[in-house]
Image (cartoon, rainbow, N blue to C red; front, side, top):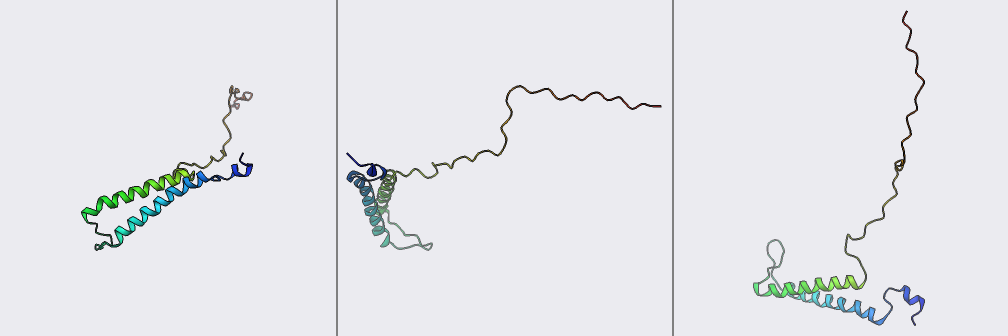
Length: 117
């Protein structure tokens, strides 16, 4: 039976560590492959690599593998999607509207019009 301390640690078990380590290893391999492809390419005037047509699918698949592994790494670590957590609402500074019947307006006693002489 796991101890209470192990329940507090988010990734205490061997399977949890493996669940995190596998996507991380795939990310490292994919990134190393992308760098190996891009490093040997000539650059254009703007500084971007000129990718030959036959290397485009290879580079595209390496980028897809990195993106997929990054997504799996995010899920394994329990991180939410960016922008999905919203900050808590601050309490309103306005007074709440009165509910219930509206009291009749206070009437003032009628005043006599000024006497004209």
